[in-house]
Image (cartoon, rainbow, N blue to C red):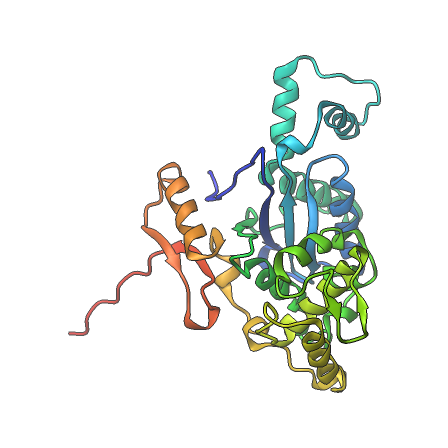
Length: 333
């Protein structure tokens, strides 16, 4: 049975997805060993297929991933062949013809193939390790296409939701202390933060990298963008709403106030702390215009039985998701 999934591969722009899956029956089977293996396989796969890990968290019974699929035009035929040889584990194999080459290019830019490959490899390892068999995950993974643009905070919202999973679960009081999440990895200089310089340019519109920094009296260098984006993102998770118009001094002062608070007393923004299926049970997340664009593009192809429409709530500040229209309640007799 086909799974409802809004997905696309583009020759000229990247596509971002929030990916979620859970263990069947809600069993708590992901211990430290399993989480290490999940992380190993996730990052190893990016050398063979075409994706970048932007964020992730591995919990005891589920995971969230934020995956970037780059433009298909970014990969030339030489790199494509290198990845094909890694994927086939054969250093001498060649494509039979151009059709096979084009098919492989399409597959490795397909979120279904990327995550299916990741999950399959993990389940095979898990069953060998635990001498078990059968299905591990309860269903096919959920995926939501995320708008990444200067017109929407959607990516930051999703990253905050992912990062605060272990806080929400009561495991840590600060996501930087949870080893199996992208936020801690990002602060440690892991490859999960490779796009942070681009995110600085995209989201920190009120903070020019070449502007004079009143906080310390120096200029921002290009290589400082990653560090500053992470400061802005932390302030965002903690509730600083005016980061777009704030200068670096404002961000620094806000963080200083928060960091003088004992860790156990930290109060993360309620918008991200509360568990919300707004993120994980929809098809698209972004501005209303972005969601309507994808609705127009995919509605005929998906053949939904129920009418889908952009959905938001007051506190989401113009972030929309694509969901089935709620059924009207019957009037009381």
